[in-house]
Amino acid sequence: MKPKILLQLDADKHPSAFDAVVAIDAGVDHLLSHGAVEPEEVESLVHGAIFTRGPSDLKSTAIFIGGHSVARGEELLANVTKTFFGPMRTSVMLDSNGANTTAAAAVIAAGRHLDFEHTRSLVLGGTGPVGQRVALLLARQGAKVELASRSVDRAADACAALVAKQQGAAVEPLAFGPGAKLEAQYDLIVAAGAAGAQLISKEQLGAQNYLHVVVDLNAVPPAGIEGIDPMDAGREESSLVHYGAIGVGGIKMKIHKAAIARLFESNDQVFDAAEIHDLGLRLEAE
Image 1 (cartoon, rainbow, N blue to C red):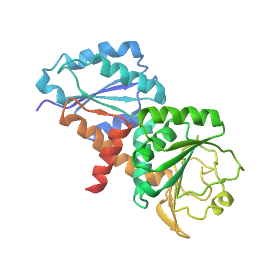
Image 2: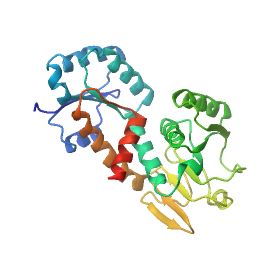
Image 3: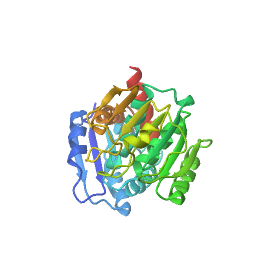
Image 4: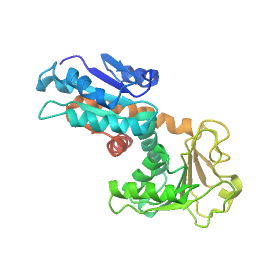
C-alpha cells in the first residue's frame, strides 16, 4: 500500500497545529499543510493530489479542511468536491473549528442517557456553527429541538436552513437571553454559545421539572450553563447528568482520530456533520 498522505487545507494563515498532531497520531505518513487557502486556489491543490497517483492508489490520499471559519470551510469543501471527476477523487473531511466533531460528541454523550424520539431539547447559542450542527444531529435522531438565540429572526433563519438539510426536522426558533424565563420544559439543554458567556443560570435550570441532561460546550469561565465543570463527563447531581467541554472533548478526540483513519479506507467518502456523527455512533456501539 502507498504511504498515507493527508492534504490539510486551512483557511487560517497558519494551518492548525492541533489538527496536524491529530492527523499524525491517527496514522498519517505524510502531512501536506497549506494555510490561508482561498476558494479559487482549491482546484490546483486538489489536482496536485489526485493526478500523481492512479485511481487504485487514491484511497491512500485524503483531504482535511480546517480553520476557524466554518463558513469558509464549507466553501472550500464545495470547491474540493466540485473538482473531483470520475474515479479521480479522494476522501475528504470537514471539521473547521472542530464544529462537526464537537457537535457529534455532544449528541452522542446526551444519547447515552436519552431516547431522542421522546426528547424535547433546547440548544442555546443555536445560531453558531456548533449549535446549528447540534440541532441538526438531534433532529436527525428524532428529537424535538428548540434553537435559541437572542434574535428570533436569526433563530428562524437557522431553523429554515436546518429543515432544508433535513426534511421533516422538528426544529423551532426561540428568542432567549440572559435572565429570560423558559416557558417550556425540556429533557436536554445544550449550550453551544461563545466562549466565556453564561447563557443560563442555576435558577433558570431549577425551574425545569423534567430536565435530565445538560451539556456545556464552553471551556472558558464563566460556564455557559452555571454549575457545569468543564471536566464533567456524565457526573450526576440530583438526577441531572452533567457534561462539560473537556468531558465531551474525550469523545470528540476519539471520533476525530477515527474519522482521519477511515478516510484511507476508500477514495469516495465525504465526512461532514452527519457522516462524522454516524461514525461516532458506530464507535459508541463497538
